[in-house]
Length: 311
Image (cartoon, rainbow, N blue to C red):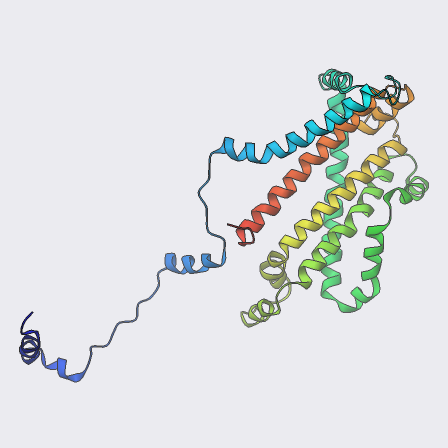
């Protein structure tokens, strides 16, 4: 406006008396619960729009399918080169035909069910024991000095070395197999938890102390959630050890009255049925890959939750 200054003066003259006392005090805005939760969510990764399910599955599957195609092609080339007789080194077609007939029999699924029951039971016991031992070792310095190196030594020890002792202690029974599975997997679980607790930021521990977290509440609400990514890695490694121990146990310890995947593979070897032996090898491989994908999914979910993945 042309006379903006004069107009402002007139408006000031007719302003309330309180106008001359300075600016009116501003009210402090209080945050509602939704706004507070929004501020807390800033520490986490932003949610991204989910793409098409089929496209995401294809992006994840095509590298695996390409790797399988390369392996099968090399396998066929070695077979055509007649490196070994056909009854010793069969073609992929013969093996896949045998595998197709195998998976349609009820006995095959009974063996898989028995093997998976042993694997899940042994791994669950290993997780329980490894978690308790890892928490205790990370909590008490004298205990770490006493058995910290022993846990690492047990982790690096081949599981098959335990079977002679397990057979002497438990004879040819389920307990012998469970003993080796647990002692093979528990050290990895314990070391994963110990590493996760060691790398919890000291600042978080001091904040928890200020907030009054003590004892079990401190572990439950602060230390264990913060160490979860490393703990999941320890669980994944522990599963790998338990799975390998179980397969070795089923080949060495044949429990009377049970027919597991390992027993069926041993029977196929006794009959010199190479296609059947390779079929069971593929079954064990596929089961291991599927379980590994479950652990990868859990690990990726944690990384996204904590904002550790790329955009």
